[in-house]
Length: 463
Image (cartoon, rainbow, N blue to C red):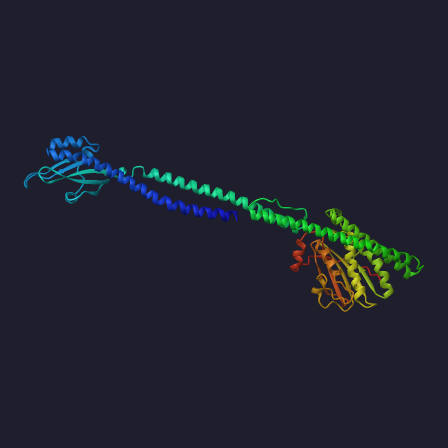
């Protein structure tokens, strides 16, 4: 916008300068010529009274010499009184006989080498017409024209420079608030909720800044309300959890009682984690961001969660295979988030496949990513694209469609992604790519089909 305003002002000012300077330059040139020829006419008129009195050569010579042009710049042509009498020629003649014949009837200006000749007819006592010739050089005709044109050019250039500078200042005054508004919108889109725009500039941009700041305040307030609601709802679950924990404690001993108590304890930890996460996000997400930056050991998290799910799998007669978790592999994901994503995938296996269906969890460590594969031998997912969209799960009654969305957000936070396909077991395979650099470049390569080199680990099977 700034350069567009400068170009517009430059074009308009240039057209105005040309429209006025060119005609004014021509007028200056015309005035210089008129001034030179008017001066010549005055010198020619000074000889008129002398010709009216006498045509004596000596007297005419003295009269011509007394003028400003002198004998070198003025000439007098007096025809003879009778047909045989010789004409009188005084001064340095430059015009031709044809020009003199024309000038005897009317005054004229004839071009001659080096300039012009003003030919002025004057009646003499004998009744004939003498012609006074005044030489006007080219320098006299154009005297002062070049200087005037330079002055006009300088004034025009100064006007153009001044208009461009003014347009640039006005453009800066308009563009800077617009750039600040665009930058603040981009920062808000990246999650910097504290960004605001200075309310300055033209009236329209000030109104836009006021609207943006109001919108940002509203977004912050809505997010705060949402987090408070999540924390309050999670806190309300503590009462029924307490009842469940007391009831589970009265079940006595046995595998079923132990699993129930473990499930209640896990549920209570998850509720506490939700409450802490909501509170931490309210204070600018600093603890959550620090946890994500520190990362966690994916192998350790998977082993810990599989200890819980393996017991349930044993009760349902499911064959379990676990591979690639014998060595530590750190990923830039907070431990609770990774555990929640893994629980969401394994929970889908138990929820949407019949008892006795086998499943497997594989971990592959590459140079730029870690791949977590959760496979089952169930019936598969009919529409994988819909399953990855939030709230569009196809798991039937009781399915919210949020489990795979949790997995997708965890993967995308590291620059990775999630894909659903057909597993080697015949059912569904959820492939989760976790980028090790935490940037978006890996996600771009994944979308272009780049897989990279994956170093497969020695598999360890657990049934």
